[in-house]
Amino acid sequence: MKTVVLSFLGTQLDAGRAPDRWNRWRPTIGLCQQDDLLIDRLELIHDSRHAKLADRVEEDIAAVSPQTEVRRHILDFADPWDFEEVYGAMLDFADCYPFDPDQESYLSNLTTGTHVAQICWFLLTEARYVPGKLIQLSPLRGRAAPIAGHYQIIDLDLSRYDPIARRFAAERLEGTSFLKSGIVTKSAAFNDMIGQIEKVVIRSSAPVLLLGPTGAGKSQLARRIYELKKARHQIEGDFVEVNCATLRGDNAMSALFGHKRGAFTGAVADRPGLLRAAHKGLLLLDEIGELGLDEQAMILRAIEDKRFLPVGSDKEATSDFQLIAGTNRDLRQAARRGSFRDDLLARLDLWTYELPGLRDRREDIAANVEYELQKFAATSGERISFNKEALRRYLAFATGGEAVWLGNFRDLGASITRMATLADSGRIDEGIVEIEIRRLQRAWAGKGDGERDALVGLLGFERLEQIDLFDRTQLATVIEVCRRSRSLSEAGRELFAVSRLAKRSSNDADRLKKYLARFDLSWSDLAQG
Image (tube, rainbow, N blue to C red):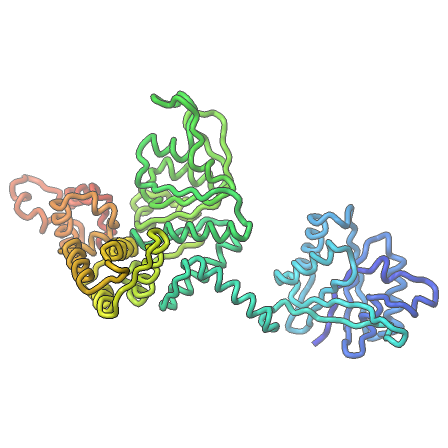
């Protein structure tokens, strides 16, 4: 395999006309004088003004290393210390260069050129625009020292350097643990997901979409992402959290985008809006699926253009924020129904992660119980613990099939808080645990069956809680019939079998379609179940 070096001409270090130039260290010549490094080709970069020096250096290389081919490239900079100009020109050079890593190995020379050029070599090599390694040369001191000096090859694959790799791994683990709030999980899938999220939010400012049931920790994770980016000086502004389910009508537009005084009745002063409050910071739009189509259109423009129009204003406002969106709804189904914009979903869907509910992370319940006790101690100033038998009994219940955990980690946190509050002498005993178990059993009575799960899966927990028990039972029956029927018409005939007899003409499919629309559902939603 041939060795190829990409290098700038050293306009000062490589200079020299008189014969005594052979008595001092010249890095480009010394590069080709190394006993244990054969340079097959040197790609020598210089500007037009130093063409004569490049001629002399090429001749001297031919004298000391005749097997080295020198190819010259002219790069003229208006300002060799202008980072944007130099990096752009070097990137263009790398893009056009016919790299062949299967046949050639490449070295980028950090020794010559301005500091700006050296930094650019590092960045281009690290980003793999130059598929090789870095080389750095330096002179040796002393009368007997070889004029060629010595060299060091720097491989940017950190795994080759154990101490650096260990430190890098430790810092990465610290970031991942930070996002998990320090809780060690036994779930390999959850660990992998948090590890990827940590990479993404450190390297990108693109929107992130967090899916998962209510209480799965979407808001907590978003806040930890903000704190991680803030600690690494990647973000300056505030963390602004919005529950979109609480925004209705004109209030949604005004709350998000602000309004001008007099924009509507009661608007007695200007309102900046939450998007402007998140400038240079992080905006969490939780339950984004609850926003109306108009608000969705404004959000999309704010993401893409960093601009939006406050209510009642003819002048656009600006805000540069990173967006994290959360939802417990299936936004793809919502987009098919027309209640969520396809273009906004496409913009949000670059980085999508689904946080599992507590029922899908039962192996982590024990660690989360301890974490909730630590939180209680931090707020109350009192350290509480379980006795051995009480902890065994509670974990047996919490990880068993009887535990529904509809509110996920919120349910668990509330449960631990109740027991810790009732604990005497800092100990939770079996009696307190039995009281708590009975409380949870009563709260979950009839809510962990298949009917409840089906409704939660379609509507989400928060929406289901807004529907009367009477309507829930009826809707569950409709869903059951639809899922075993081959068509909308067949399901309608079964559901309206009695009332349809009293009608001269009946459109059962249309009646069923309108009924489902009351709950923002369609036949395709149920047929896929």
